[in-house]
Image (cartoon, rainbow, N blue to C red; front, top):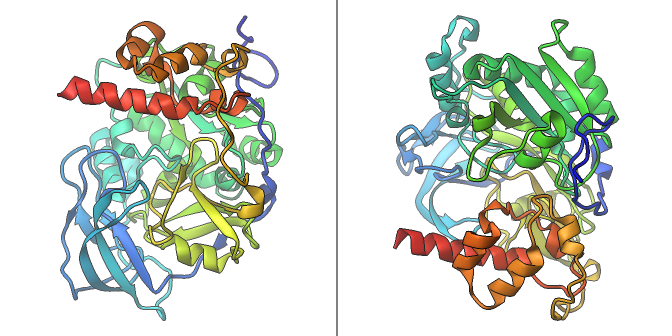
Length: 446
């Protein structure tokens, strides 16, 4: 039985309640210093990488375009600091791949003011001009998805968007950067929402915020326009409340058909961080050169939310926040859907929402032993997509990957990790599903 979407704190059926560790949500955003060198990847977004337009030895200014967009589904890259281009070549990224990057030796005495900008009168711009301007900012989905913002807001003429859903759930444990953005940059957020509404044609907006952030809800509510076109609604604090499918159901009571996108049911979803930066940068004509992210975890002595220049090596970040010497595991993003990294020399990118550090004493001494499925049904109770993770796991063990997709809706899984979290047999279900999807994709393109 699905929960009613009109309950006081809107929600969805199933999901889990992990320990949230949201202590940094009460701390104001602080600015980070420049690292001596910044490593700026040319591919920080879904789509084609940017094309480098500077040379080794060239002096550059903060905010200057150093790589141009290569087509529509691509974004430019802006210099996050004033300095000199020290190297151009492949460098390691957080996902283990080698990507074309620009290394900048920073002029440490220079300030953090953006020196290259082209102010715009966005009220006088039409939809196409706004979309072009949004692309020029270089903004991608700052919630972690990294989809170019202008592409997501480009609604086909035959598609009618009746509601813009703004995702302020931030349901991942430890992460609180969205929370602080909603509290401290409320006007930026509302400006970004109005721009997104103009571009997409959406006549109304609903902002969903989990009810463990009452100060964020109050700050937004106090700034809402009187015409009722933008509203805010409390969501139950539950994981994965911030997934597109679940937040749309919680706020609107609508379900996305299998294989379709939210636009097919008249909805467009954007993260609060993405829209706040859109509202902050578009009129000033600046490119994105930094972002707010959470640095936390038991091995961090000075946890908080920081404005960090893009390209800052993780090693520099952790040294600055006093990461303990016993820090043995670092995760980019949240602990549920984030990525464990093997090198601290990879940089912060546009999609880095958090850096979490854990010490040896906070981790199990050895990997938990995996047992056979005991058919307890806990994964079925947790899955927000009403799938059967137990059956999918049994098929994965037999490498029946195509059957998983054809008969058991593997592609409906968005890899939230709820099933793995509750499994008493410690079966790495979500990892098995990722492998199955990758194999099926390879076969489809062979």
